[in-house]
Image 1 (tube, rainbow, N blue to C red):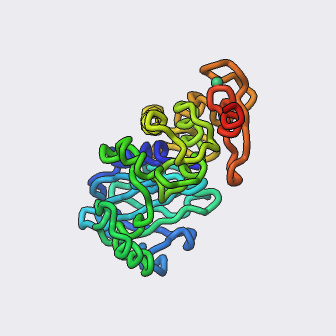
Image 2 (cartoon, rainbow, N blue to C red; image 1 turned 135 degrees about the vertical axis):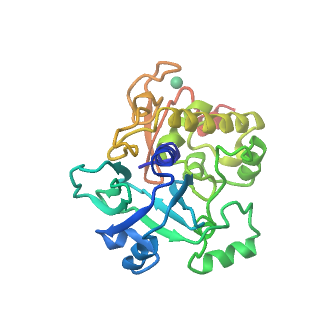
Image 3 (cartoon, rainbow, N blue to C red; image 1 turned 90 degrees about the vertical axis):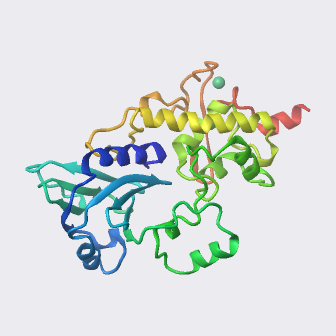
Length: 303
Ligand SMILES: [Zn+2]
């Protein structure tokens, strides 16, 4: 499933290739892909003639900002991909939504398993910082109107400069959840999924079952650095391709073979040479080095 580095790669590709393009027509081939507005025909009608401004990312969604201020959100979920197809490219039976650009190219939303969702929203509210809990509840109660409301429950962006070690420490405080569980929680931190959670914990030498509130200040700083480092490396390698993830050029990313622990169970740890283990936490497969990432229970027993 595409995580922050994969989605960021797609957004950067699109920023280069479709900024300034006009959407001549929109063809919705699978109506359930359209989350908002309803019905899908209205989504298509409202986009006709719009011009693409910049393309960005929030959490695991691509944000296509239109020149008039509205924003298209694309949540790729399991198998979604946004691919720019030059004129004459053979049709794709898994293309669920096709944006016909005025210059003859197509921006195709491809999704084999059809879990992804696309919405069109009014702009605004994205930069709101730490909304008060009351206004947050209001935003959740009604159907989102502005793009900011779509992400009202999401946690901070880990690569923003405002995401400091102190802020991470603050968020870990009083949380009894296990580190792995918390890193996957999108309301705790946005954009991290199974791959980068395992990679960050290995890099920080922290066991995935450590209680969040048990970390020393030094361990928090290590975790903070590790999260940012693995995400940056993922972006530099254009993401990790497992299953269906591809960049907007249709090519897979190169980060899968550069991962340190994810899906390497039984293979030697790159730091100590002992075999990587696998365990299941909250139904998610977790990869770690039992030697470098000490088990909190074993540690307790040794005291
Ligand atoms: Zn190791």
